[in-house]
Image (cartoon, rainbow, N blue to C red; front, side, top):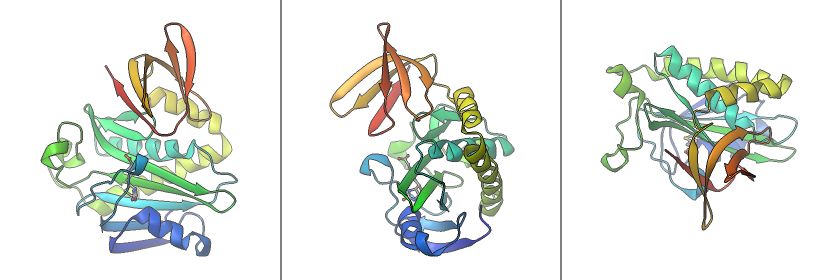
Length: 232
Ligand code: BTN
């Protein structure tokens, strides 16, 4: 991953750019931008992407579009953060949290039979806007000094390569690691799915990426989709 790289000063969204070129480039091609003018998050939300953060997308061509791909990104981000001395965990379905706040978000998109895009946003040196500071954090707040973005990218690409192999060859082992890193397991969580709020104990993350909840002793599977999650 990252043998071919496209580095841009500015782009609408690296995911959008990656989709536009996916048919013409080899698997593993990486698109990185210094800033995005229309960075996107899940559920159609926008994603603040000023200079100083790492905004990138990887073009992959796995045998099928697989919801577990998001965990390749999450585990690679966790390992990258650990390389810089920052402890973090997976907040299902697609965030990485450190010190109780969001440090990274992952957005996967795919077209069956053609490509999967793994988009990763990682707050590195960028300042978090005032109104988000309670919920979001950057690496620099942990390290106390600015980090070289290219070094962070190198570590991330290295770990992405490793976890992508595990995903292709032993997806069961990928999920073992995911469960280990998912700090919500065993906790009471509230999931918002459309208009519905569901609270229960998070028991497991299943092989299709869904969350298994115990609600008053009844089991319920929450699909990885348009959900948001709070925990206590
Ligand atoms: C989320 O938390 O909702 C996911 C955020 C994903 C942000 C990254 S930044 C690089 C890539 N390009 C985008 O437009 N989004 C992803």
